[in-house]
Length: 137
Image (cartoon, rainbow, N blue to C red):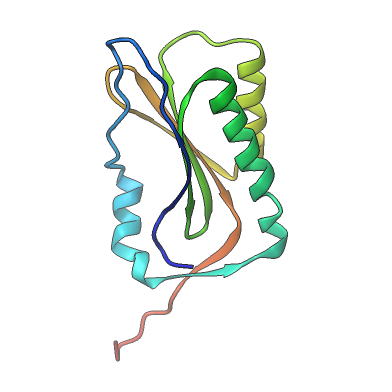
């Protein structure tokens, strides 16, 4: 598996004039960019069992509530990037996002323009380690 991102799912739904998802320059991603060549991943069959249910839950949220979302397979696993508008949410959507949060191994939130924020949820499906540094390289 390479170190790039492979798009698994993407959706965008029509919004009003205040639409505004965007902005991907995250400090963590910049850090990974500097070290990505030294990262190594090893498939973990036990962790891989989480991928199907996680992707299905994320897609269900996007399709049921017309929420913009991207799901990527990345080096260490899968990431779901959900674009959420500033609003009040309740009921079934809150329960479904709560379930997805419980399935996640890490989460981050960042602003994404005029219309809200990005909730990024990751699951680990591979063991990750940094290649040893040597003086001969």
